[in-house]
Image 1 (tube, rainbow, N blue to C red):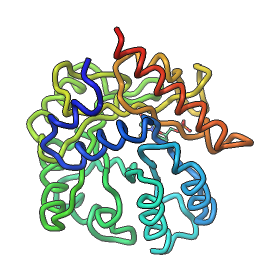
Image 2 (image 1 turned 120 degrees about the vertical axis):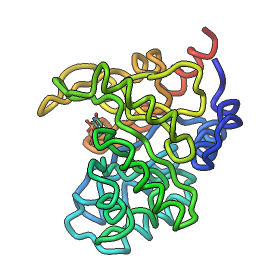
Image 3 (image 1 turned 90 degrees about the vertical axis):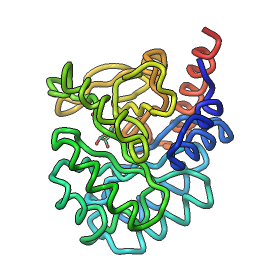
Image 4 (image 1 turned 180 degrees about the vertical axis):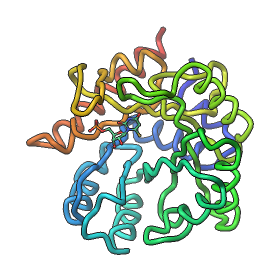
Length: 258
Ligand code: S5P
């Protein structure tokens, strides 16, 4: 198995390269899904947990008191603590709509999010719409496709997942990997797998969410564990984040020796 560093050398997308190098340097494959609904809480948690993570995953549209200082604040914290920002926007529309959703509106996502994700259901046009914005901006940006999902009964399986992998392979300039439950494709080291639905204790969550442990998803070939409530709902989020960080990194080292 290649190390994160070795894989960074195989990426043509600069965000993918930067992310894999950052993971290797900082020794953390933990992404924190900071699903809180106020500006103060969001920035406070990003500052506190920032030193432990490679990626901060946001749902910017759940912040009730949003104003542009939220995203400038997040960008400053990303610099301070050396993490990338992933806006979990799950774009799913035709290219020309997605182009506007990504670049404009209230959130102007392309200006501050290093990474966004998209459902492949809309076909090639969705990647083309996102690519158009990225080229116009001239910034380093990456897109993840939802190849699988964590919720019980989801439809991203079988042929859909296979076609999503093909879409990623055909768009290596902007697509840097997947939301998936493990490694989706072998021998494509430039594609990075991000796995949500992770908790120290496996089991069912609310509203059909399903949880696996950091050890089991890393053994399944994922690269980055996404933890939300396991951290932000804890009495001591920093202590919990350290536990997930250690578990994720140890599981990676175990995989390297196999
Ligand atoms: O299939 C998915 C895809 C995503 S991105 N399942 C998920 O749970 N997510 C996101 O990961 C979800 O939107 C949430 O922000 C996070 C999981 O949060 P947790 O509190 O269940 O750890």
